[in-house]
Image (cartoon, rainbow, N blue to C red; front, side):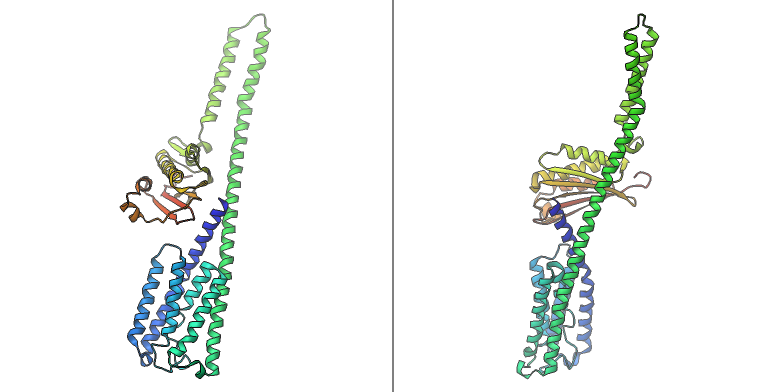
Length: 405
């Protein structure tokens, strides 16, 4: 499960970096448009130029709106778009107009493919993408009517310099992205280990507190009953008052022991329940997959919120058992800034989550039921899943500061 969770975390960090790179993509798209507007005198095929810009804009918009991590098909199409832009830069301007005479039509937009390949696939893939863009840069010259044999030394130097920048950029960004992803995964793993240790320490402290209370009250009373009982057993005359006194002591300690056993952790107020206890109860009742439960500190809520969130988690775990082919699952809960978050993760086969498509196929029943429980509490449910990398279902419910602890 650890390897699956690490892989999921790495995928999440890479996706975040890829979305961050979209800012540069929009800037380069805007600059390419500005060049097309200001360099109209050298545009021999303006319709083709603006068609290329429109295609690039549509593709950039699609990437910005997509929530899925970039797949190999997406990466391939992005490289095709960017190399095509480079080649078209030789067609849209008048023959013989090279970069030494005017700004390059595609500007810096093709660099985006190199960046995306480097972030998602690593430095080697980034270098390979850089080589493809550099090769297209060289072939844009013959498309502009300038044979390779006619290129001057400065023009060859320009082509070589641009290609080197593509190669170095792809490798460098890939290395930096790899370091950031590995650091993020390591930090998340360390944080989880610290949280687990903190949880273990909290349980130990609770156990020690309970042991002290039992020792100071119940065990002392039992020792007294044991001692006086033996004395009465050897006494010639037994006072009914003495026996009644021992019975009262035993009865009182029975009540105290029962209170200790049934009390809510951390002295939860009347009408409020421990969310962690409720989640652990649900986890124990699940068969077919190993479930671990952890939380950041005590999470004590009103009975309705606890019951509904625990029921939603139970449905999520049942879904894991029935459909995920998972071996392990984890449930994590925390309360922060007025919001209770509960995440259910598994290392199963995952699925392509599309709520509309699932609903059309009549396969959204349990997910809809879970979502309904959380929505009734004023919260939201999010599903993050893909084929081969497990599933994470996250419930977030706003809780009044006075109700959460």
